[in-house]
Length: 446
Ligand code: PA5
Image 1: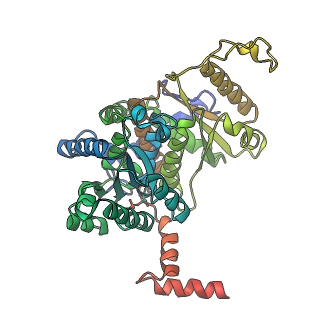
Image 2: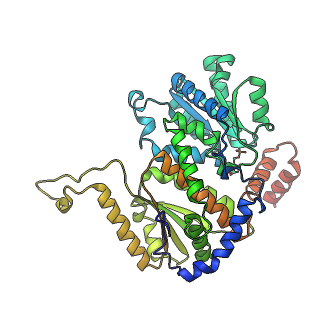
Image 3: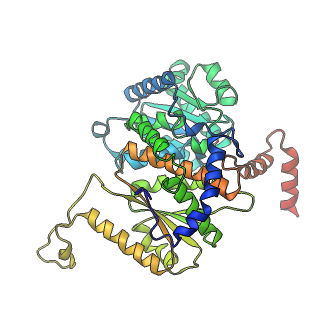
C-alpha cells in the first residue's frame, strides 16, 4: 500500500478491502469510461492534460495586470466558486497575508465577497478598501446565483464611482459559463475580461480552472506548480487496485459508513489548512449527501479544538472516524526558549522545535482516540507547497467521485441546494416564484 495513505488504524481488515475491491473497480470504470451518473461532469479528471494554453496565458496576463494596478483583489463567488481558491490561498500564503505591508507581501490583498448575504460583512469590506486601488474577479458558473450577484452590484458601483465606467470595466474579471447566464451577457455587453468555466466541470471540482487559478495567482502562488501537482495526482492515482490511495480511502470510508460510522472528521494540525477543510466539506457534503445517504463531513483544527470538540470525539457516541492530514515537513520551525526561572516548568522542552511538539500532540491524540474507539486514516503530504496541495486536491476529488459511485449516488449533482433557493425566491417575490411565496406565507400565518 502507498505511503500517501496510512490505514493502520482504520480498524479495517485486509480481507474487507479485498472484498470491496471489485466494487471500487466498477466505480472507477464508470468514471474512466464516462458511463456513470453525472457523466457530463468529468472534465476535471483530465483538465490539466489539455489545458487551453491561450486561456492560461490570458490568466497570467490578467494576474500581472492586477498585481500592477491593484492593492486589493475582491473575489466574488459562493460554494465551488470560492472555496477552492480560498483554501489554496489560505494554505500557501502567510498566515496574516492581508495584514502584511505591501513591501513584504508584493501581491494584492485578497478578500472574498458574495459568499453570504450579510450587509455587515459587506459594509466592513467597503471600509477596508476605501481609498485603495482594487479589481474584482466575479465568479459564477450559472451566472445567476443571488449572493454573488448582489455583492457584484455593489462593487461594480464602487468601481464606477472611483474610476469611471471605462476604467472600471478594465478592473472587472468575469469567470463564468462560455455561453449562458446573466454574467456572460454582462461581460459581453460591457467588455469585461472573461474566463470560461468548462461545461463539464461542476463548481466544487473547478479549482484547477480559471475559477481557482486567477485568485490563486494574484496571491503570489505559482499556478504552474499547482497545476503540476494536479497532473502528478492524475498520474499517481490511476492504478486499479488498493495500491491506489484513492481506492483505499474511498473503500475504507464506505466500509466504516456501513458499520455505522456516519460522521467523518477531517483533522489538521496547521491553522493554514482550516479553509482546506471547508473546501473538503463542500466537496464531500454536496457530492455524497443525497437520497437519504452520505457521511456527514466535519472538520477540526487541532490542537485548538482538542480543547473543545476533542472531548466529544474521545468520549461521545461512537459514530465517528477521523482523516488526518499529516504534513511531513513544515518550512518554519521555532525552538522553545530557555527560561532561567522556569516558573512555568517548561524547561524540559527547551531547544525542542515546535513542529516536534506538534507532532507529539498528533501522536498522543491519535493513541487517545484509538483508545476511545475512533478509527482513523492518515494522509501524508511531504510539505505545504503548491505542488503538494494540487496533488492533495486531486486525491480528494478522485476519491470523492469513486466514493459517491460506491455509495450509489450521483457525485456530480446537488439537487438539495435548489430547495432553499426556491423558497428564498418565493419569499422575496422573484418573478416566476409567486406561487411558492404564497404557500410559504400561508404556512407562516397558520
Ligand atoms: O459545487 C457547486 O456546483 C455549487 O456549490 C456551486 O459552486 C455554487 O452553488 C455556486 O454556483 P455558481 O458558480 O453557479 O454561482
